[in-house]
Length: 346
Ligand SMILES: NC(=O)C1=CN([C@@H]2O[C@H](COP(=O)(O)OP(=O)(O)OC[C@H]3O[C@@H](n4cnc5c(N)ncnc54)[C@H](OP(=O)(O)O)[C@@H]3O)[C@@H](O)[C@H]2O)C=CC1
Ligand SMILES: CC(=O)N[C@@H](CCC(=O)OP(=O)(O)O)C(=O)O
Image (cartoon, rainbow, N blue to C red; front, side, top):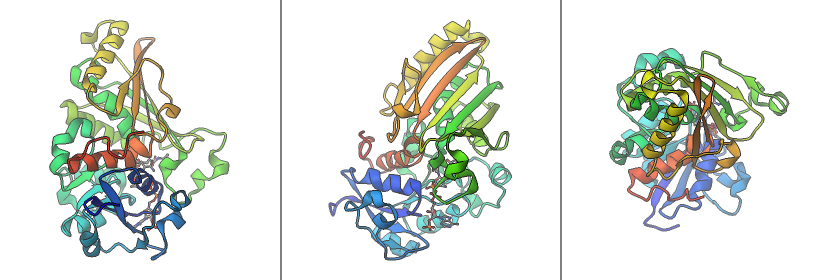
């Protein structure tokens, strides 16, 4: 730990994304974890809750007191569930901290859309549509000076990254997009729930929230914000018997401008390669990406293939890294002027 390093506070530190932040910060040369909060177990070491950290992290759990935390740390990583997060983000920001919010509370452009899909009143509606979406590949300039960054959702990351440039280029039909995604069980968080028990998920794959998942509006909102073009899409998530990882298979139709399906595939691969040529974590590959290829890393792999009269895009990320905590560390690096790869080299 160096006294000149950035001081990071982890809010809601007993969950899976918090462990991933703590793990990544162990190798960060310019930032240290100095505060970890929990509603329970005050005074216990974080490593007792997350045994993976044993001998490597001696931070003690403390309650969430924004003014105390603002004295001890410079940036807060807020790993709380949506709904509960907005209030804490507000307190921490008003206490003078820069905040990266892992929840969906500030991702969407409109209060109505948030309240419709999340089924709760927003506790700080004035900030909706006024918080930068934490995808440095598109919003790095705004992230540099942001007080609050809305870290992207995991499924949306895997869909927005390939779709936004393709929609912007006019190469695909914008009202006929199907996003079919599979996630590891850690995507559902660490709190016990019937649907994520071992006996429910092992040796089984199931679709859920068909037509009702709250990440569909996030995908549409962000693709429109980045490309300037509204889109329609269908999104179906699946729970798969893996600890971690997301694979999204995305079915699109080439536009008339794109020409034949084969020509469209070539144009799309070139476009994606150009778009992400300077992005350290986004790889447009020739092979079919798999979750294993990106497990535990901040990397995104994507490719484009021809199938019948459609083009199929396959995109793999790790839900806990590029889908949450790795993206948060990447955002922190951009906010504080560090190299984008600090703490994320593997
Ligand atoms: N898991 C994933 O792959 C991804 C998660 N996210 C988002 O990141 C956030 C954290 O996710 P994750 O780490 O998986 O979640 P977990 O359920 O694993 O952990 C969340 C933590 O928040 C605290 N908490 C729970 N409920 C409340 C509450 N009502 N008020 C205050 N604190 C609460 C708990 O800590 P304690 O009980 O100790 O106070 C808990 O450990 C969520 O918003 C999630 O949607 C985003 C992208 C991917
Ligand atoms: C497998 C699984 O259950 N995944 C979660 C998504 C996790 C996530 O990114 O959700 P937020 O938008 O709330 O941050 C889900 O479908 O609800």
